[in-house]
Image 1 (cartoon, rainbow, N blue to C red):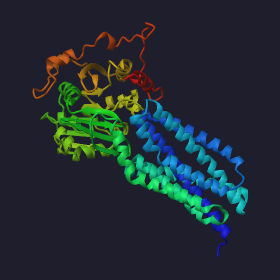
Image 2 (cartoon, rainbow, N blue to C red):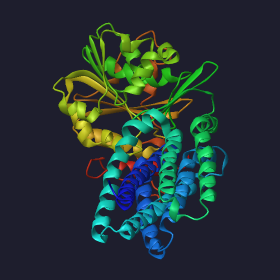
Image 3 (cartoon, rainbow, N blue to C red):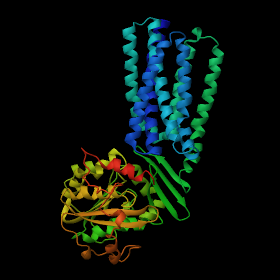
Image 4 (cartoon, helix red, strand yellow):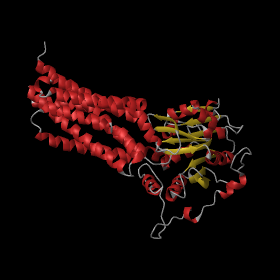
Length: 516
């Protein structure tokens, strides 16, 4: 039979592993929250990791002063982690909806630092307790740290592949908090002989448990009402995929798709966007038989492409299967895309666009690049010289490409930097912009391996907006949106290509959209 001391020591090691799993889940959860609500995923994850690790360091330093009542201290640390961590996502959505601007970011950073501090505080206490029971200090330290690091890996994988896509951010926080509380209750029971006023601590655990269970079952519904405040129209679909937050809203006849809070289209004016994206390159290509769409998982660009009888194959590459599945199954999206993704000529690839082009050996007559704006590192690589070089290498000599390139009015330098980056690959470009009420003035860059002749481009008759005559006017830019960019000092701004090694586009994008 194992001695009571060995059982308690083993429990401590298990506890250290479990709380480490919970700690890393909270850490990546806070990064995901910041990315979704505050934007710029790389920046938010960087801040989150930095604050969390700094908090752990502060907590470890404070732990030096904890030499007595180790178990009850650990239990109350778990109580605090459960309460603060459990209600973190729920409260964050509430603050975003109702609190003054900027307080949500401050709240998230304080919570991140606090949970990090509590995590850093609990591990030395567990090591000290294992040593107190009789384990050698070197051995107890190594085993607790092993449990901590191994738990970190498990926690990260759990969040990425199960919790976030299956439970979402609110329910995940409450669920993980329940695990923290369960660890505290098990420790409380096993070490009950050492603890004074056991009923008081048990009552506190029961009270916290009631709050967390209520949050687990009802918190997401309440947070949904908070999230609704972030959108103008009623939410008819909301899900957290492995890659992003997908929200569909509808008010009367206007259906809107949002990815991570950014508007992708409004059904009231999407025809202006998609007709400009699709028809100029389709009309410029010698024979548009084989078409590649990068992005466009909603299927609306594919609908426009399929209007051409010459089209034999359409390859649509969208990273997130949740978006393409929604386009295949959701009634409102199917009405908009006219079931284009079910057409026999269309094949959907749920892959990264960069990797797809690297691995493909096909040539395309038309390439449509309908990707989100370059507001983070993963999207930035799809706006680099390296990426556009791949586009050039997969484009038929008589083919054409069209790139959505954000707003030349709101983000002038960003727009022309994209054009400069495409031009740097050796392709010829032509610039277009169009007024889209839900977006504002929006820009596109058309590219080809041959000079582009606007006068030779034909536009089909069944469009709702675009005409051959209008196409010429879309190439004219006003002084405040033209390529000749002047800074606040009256100096001309020189443009340089955006590359993987020198990603200058993200910072320009952030600065440009800060006031919009």
